[in-house]
Length: 502
Image (cartoon, rainbow, N blue to C red):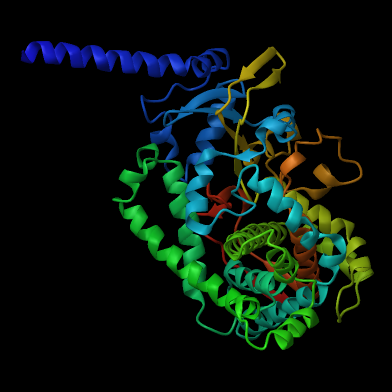
């Protein structure tokens, strides 16, 4: 009797396993045609990829060992690795690849399902409704806020870096300035991060990205049942509580204006008198029309602030660090700023648009240090992939990893100076032409970052204000920097910088 039961159970397990393999036969065909590292059963490349400090370097080695794009496995998910401009263009322009990768669900479960993490049809609807809030005219209204925060930054650099003579970890100062600007332009709230104990908020943002990336790179934590019993989930619960409280603090006076029924007319008048130039006043109208719920707004506000603050402060920091490590280019930048800007006063949009070398310096830093080193997409339908050795079919459900960081510093794409900081060589008037999708720090195509103009304007203004008045110096060297593969790029150690008044 027992033997018969065991035989039946074995046959049943064999049939289930056979059915599982049969349903995935198209993935195996793609993996056979686009050969990559095989990985381990059930966890794929999980063991090799789980260390964020070696993840990007590991993927770079694979891209030279195997012909990209290639297929491998992350957990049991079919994973297409992409690091060449031709394939990046196909993915970013495909209607079938607008959904973010399945692994972003770990991020959306923590901070909400906003534009950065959502998939169709929710993404299409929210993008259409929110797009006007990032229009050029709206962004011009942010310039007074950007200029005011730039003055706060200069005072901080002068007080601590010049008067007190300290070596500064500039990244921490920049994060506070950028988050302050994000809160004001998104919610219309001034938070005074430079003057209060806001360390818990910044630690929570850092903790959140680290938790989500660790889970993305640990296939054994994908099942919710297992993850909720892990230490990582306890850590996530703690940081999410801090961030949700922070966003509720930002939203509470705005929600109360809409929710209260008493004294309705005065409150409506107050609402109408508020500037429509900030994000929350734009989306409030969609709530009143029933197109968005306040939970939608909470999710979008949380994601917008997190994405704006993380990516912009990261890109700005690496630009400052690169210029500090390369005084020749810093002096060239200073000459442009002296020629185009007055020594004091606010910077206008016309003046910003004339700062061509400043833009080159930013672009070169973002090329070397992509603010978001890798983005993930998911194939909603089968789509054809063209490679120079033939056409291949990528099955629906394939997870696609676009390695922006390694592509933008690949000598096969950018030439022998690919891993050096040289704005003239790569973005100057004499620079050789590159593939249009070789430089994609904000992605491109159908799902290009909605806030890229915002980030460019803020970075350009802050950079101009800093280097118009100060010289930044560091003893760090480019080849000494150890990067960490996170949702936004991080360093294992942040070099200290000295500030000198011009």
